[in-house]
Length: 366
Length: 248
Image (tube, chains in turn orange, blue):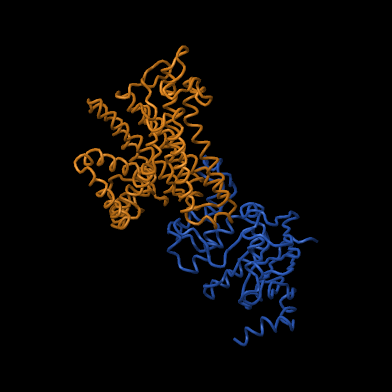
């Protein structure tokens, strides 16, 4: 008997149970504020998922996931802002306050909701494809790539902060009303918004999971192990790295859109270095080799931050830092690896427990 | 008859040091060529130059009539050259089965591989190669825990999974037992029916057993080439290589 942890069927069952559980939450929670907050956790889950895919499976440490996330968020905010503008009043108020007298050209397409939503995803995805393509072709990898993403993130942060007439600067953009799609308003405090975010999270997870199980995913894991060797097997390593980095960026862009839909606000804080670092910490604590583990890491840390953060105030960061050190020191593959070892112990005994379990280390069972 | 692989006047310098100096050789399809020479003669560097790991300073490498000089590693691999490294390079975090699966690289496009979950013909090929390499019982083990000899077999098996036209084997029998060496010799001789091999080896007994042609390198240049008996009779070869070995 193999370790149940590596059983693909068991993994899919656990994912299904997990998401069905999440989908049932709106039937128990009446508090609209809480539901909105839980929906934002879905956004963090998407981000942790994207990090797990890129770092855990692709071996590409990306400290600049805030780029794709932030570009997606700004795209959504621009779309929602333009929904509040009309023929007679085409220029958003913050631009008027900054004495712009015409709508900047790159805002024009966002007047159309479909085009705006498309761009909110397409621009960050295209950015990842181009930036990743250039970096990986030049064989920039490991810590050097991580530093490049960090530098790029800081550049975006500075530009957005600095170009106040076009981006709202440090104040960001606060669309006055909720997102409307085809005339239907998605109230951010409704279960519709919650289920929309959950739906996107489910699709992203299923796609990510299928990717890790495809031939592509296997080659990616081989590259994580020894990129040099994989080249001699005939695979273009740069092509694979660019692809996984781009898919990961696309998921982060969706997360950015979802966040703005939920909070009706975007600011350069979404592109702050510390936020991109937290995404990596979620995945590290939850277990970057497990998609579900990473997501749970995000839920755990952000949940604790919401509830314990108020109690402990500044001490919270110390607690988080200490927790991070402990996990990295004693559980380099995160909390998910606890489950893996536990089920490994069970599997080594004659009878295997029927209890289902976690997720996706690269090793398949029959 | 032109060779499957032709190396023309290849040179490689690292700064002022000439590692490969005007080296030429030709390997005829369906033969097994042993590349021998003392340490530092440039055998592994020649392999690196052929497979694109490093770029030559001057000279040309022609494979199956096509100029592959200084092409990218994966392009050369796709053209049909498989390589086993001197220090066995397997994917240590993956299972033996996954190692073989990755090596079965008929479809290398990242986009199409996103939609591929089962590779056609993989199972038969994998079973065949795993049996040949004696790895059938180890398929679900992590490659990192294999013994040195098994790791050698795994890497040889990976090269076979690639189904290359030309196999470059850099010291394939290091760390193998007598029995395993005999088996390797048998497999290599069989492979000549479908492929061409270049084997870098120090063990002259093994070379004598398998080689159709022996090429001797010395200080980055061609010293001699011919059948094993011609080589063993060559005074210069005895001087720089064989003699040296007997003295040791």
